[in-house]
Length: 181
Image (spheres, rainbow, N blue to C red):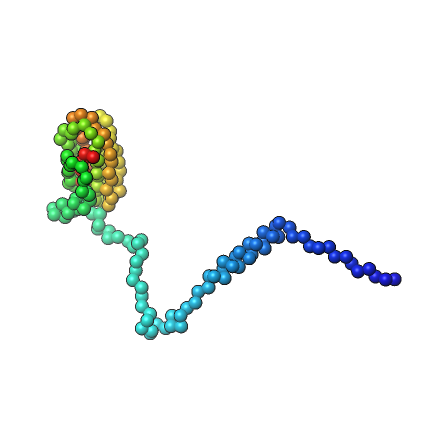
């Protein structure tokens, strides 16, 4: 009796098999470029070409005393650095110190109607709260992270007088400027 050879059916590729194959090829191509080679003298600690690279990490810790309140000439220098030059007409600038938990309140002179920029800055180890009002109307109510300055734009009616209240959980320096835009 003659034997009939078995008939082979062609293999069909399923979409899942094609996807797995393409992922494997992609990963093989990507990972083949991840090789790192050391130079011959890399591990030779006595080599004159090996030196420690200077640290350039931007996340280095900052001076812990940088935000502590200052007085005298240091306070004046900080105010000059913290309040950038105003482009418009400056109507009021003030700065000073406030004790931990104390509330310091000041008022500006009478301001003509218009649009103003109100720049606030502080120097403290904790946040400082600023509240700026025109009469009963609250214009700015802000807890500011010290080390930055904040510019707020406000529109004032005729003959406005601003009340600026500063409070700190820790001793703080504050500065603010009111200038017309």
